[in-house]
Image (cartoon, rainbow, N blue to C red; front, side, top):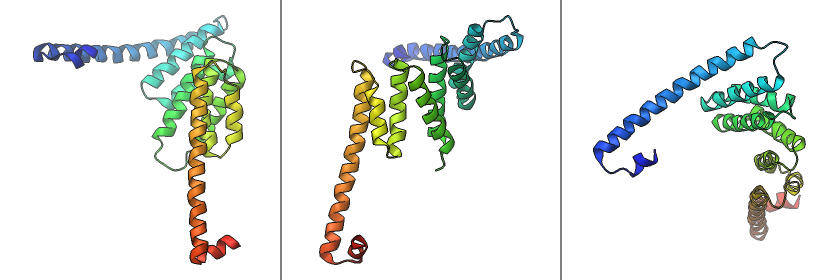
Length: 213
């Protein structure tokens, strides 16, 4: 793709484009075949199959679902591994895939009622912070969680989460910036509202009576 963007020769560019499309088609077909084989692997598992091996398969399936934009299936599979087996090597990545999937569902939901997506994002992110404190996954979960807490006006709770992020983590600065910007927006809105009230009182408008009450 980089070569295609920088190529100026029309013939060479056409050849690169053809190769890129062929590669994309091949990759898509391989994902389908991989999914089919992974599902078959789960079906063939028995009591002697190692749980760690099963979780690697589940995590891979969650990832493939995410790539194919099957976000609900990706979330269910990834969250199962993360919550059920928090000590397993595949659990953290599974939870990350699930969290990213719930965020995608939140973004793609055109309606005003996003309670399902919001509840799952907050619940899973909170679980990740508690299950793997001080880790990169926990820090990332906090940065995902903070905007949702801010929307609910839970600034103190958001600050508590930020305090749990190691000072050396780059996620710490991002989280503090998010809270700072939110507090600044609230301040600006508050000042604007105060000025409108003061003006209403000076003008003796009906709003001033409501303010007095």
